[in-house]
Length: 201
Image (cartoon, rainbow, N blue to C red; front, side, top):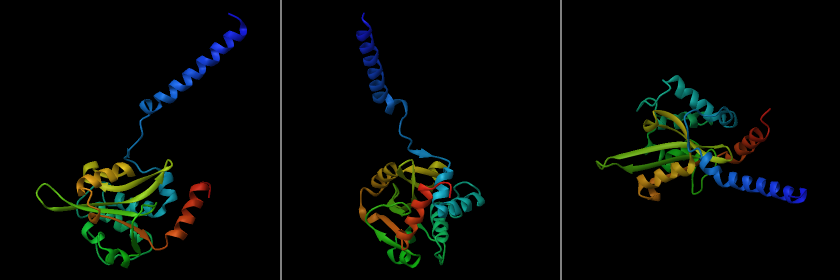
């Protein structure tokens, strides 16, 4: 085999190996959908989440219905934005446009980083249940930080997976799904981008 032919064969082999690696990548490295420890860079970029997370840790570092649950995590997040919360809210309270406006958040149709997501649904016993969390940015995509009994505490879950469960439980009833955004989102987001793009600051 001539040197030229040998070189072509080696190059072709390398290309083939590269293509093979690209094709195998999703199988070898599946997309992470749930993280049980909130990454430090998420807490740095969104300090309000850090405050709420520390409150959760100080209250037992586990899910406790009524004293350290999803709505309390979100309440602590709202407090960290500088808005007073007049009483301990439930998911039913957090579904109220009126209440959320009073604590500095407006209803929205699309999801952005920093938003509060909340939904309500009826379980198999026809009893109302609900859940809520906060949207964060990590690894070039959106996630939801929430305190869930099913995960035994606070987790960070892929937004699409969170939405899929929301749709299933609410039977895709948009009236039972709410998005709320802080009043000062534009100025807050500018600060968030600065923290994201300048990690040394």
